[in-house]
Structure formats: structure tokens, C-alpha cells
Image (tube, rainbow, N blue to C red; front, side):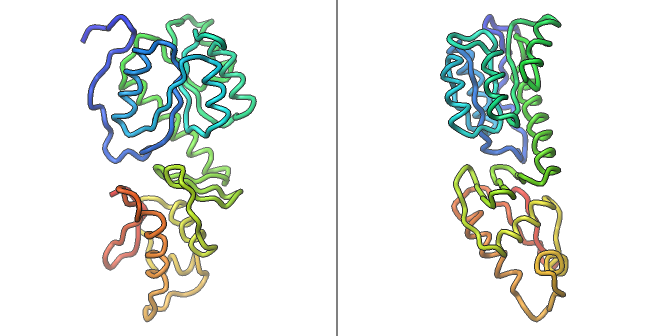
Length: 249
């Protein structure tokens, strides 16, 4: 496909199966309305939630007032350019991943972008699937770092903050009892792995599992009602005769 004049080779339906980044929020700062619409369309088709700011000042206000999982910004912007915007965001929110999109592609331009705090730099024209690939790489990198620091655990749109003890799904706060919190914590530490009732009893309850009791099943059901009931995508699943697993259906 030929490169259109606005700098994006757009490909429809580039949707990754079992997208673990489902419903993550992205802020796009782009003053070209047509380009912004095309990028948002591609992100929406891949189940990201995308907000758009059409100038640097609006982008700054949105970035600082709301929580985004990733920010994409052009460099040449009205009111505040992308470099100053990136510096402002980095000052107040050092942990949010930032991708710069720009037609300025020299080595000096890239170094200036990285020095401003950008994590990645994509030169126009670009294909939508390359942007999506870079987004996934950055989100995985930041998720891994958050997990290693022991502060934030995420799986898809499910998030647990170990410092504040808050749990959110799709940015909706979920209230858990201490034992439900501990059980979900263990599931989030071992996503996409079957956990037996014996393992859960020993690691979460610090006791030996009595096959004559169903207390683990009871608490799994409590979690399902709070974590999965109001959402189309279910995370907590039973493996018959084996145990439980946190994964997307």
C-alpha cells in the first residue's frame, strides 16, 4: 500500500488475540485531526481506550489530571511543543511510558526526544502495526518493572496497588476484604498458571488443605463476583480436578 500524505500506512483489523492490554488507557497528543483520528481508530480496534488532545497545553492538563497507561505525542504542537510536554509529564509522572511521533527523523532529533524523557521514537511515515508493536513492548516493560518493584501488579485491565491496597478493574475501584486481597495478590503473582487448592492453602492461608472443606472455592467465588461479574471478559477460571487459573477467556 502506498504511503498516504499524512504519514501513516493504515492497516485494518490488526488485532492481537488474547490482548493482555485490554482496556488500557492511552493519551494521544496530535494536532492533525485526520492523523489523530486514524491512530485512535487503530488503537480502538485493538481494545485500547484512547483520549485525544489536539495541542500541547491540553495534553499536559489531561496527562497530569488523569491516569494513563501510555502517552503518545507529536513533537510539533501548538501552545506547548512535544519536547516540553514530555519534560513536564516526566517531572510529575516519571513512570508513565511515552512514545514520540514526528516527521523529524535525524539522529539529533531523536537524541533530543530521548533527552526530554521519551521511551521510544517513531518517525513518520509509519505503519499502524509498528506503532502497536512498540506500544506492547513498552507496556510489557513497564508492567515487568512495576511487578519487580512490588508496587503495582497488572493483568489486562485489572490493577492492584500494593502500597495503597487499592484494586481497580477498567479504572473502577473494587473493594476487597483482606483475605480476598491476599488471594487475588497470589493469583496476580502467578498469571496463566494453574494453582492447586493445596498450593493456595499453603501460600495464602498458610495452612494445610483439608479435602473435606471448600473454603478456597468459597473465596474464589467471592472474588469472581467482584472481579468478573460485571465484565464481559472473565479472568478467574476453574480447571476441573486441578485448581484455578488467572487468564483471559
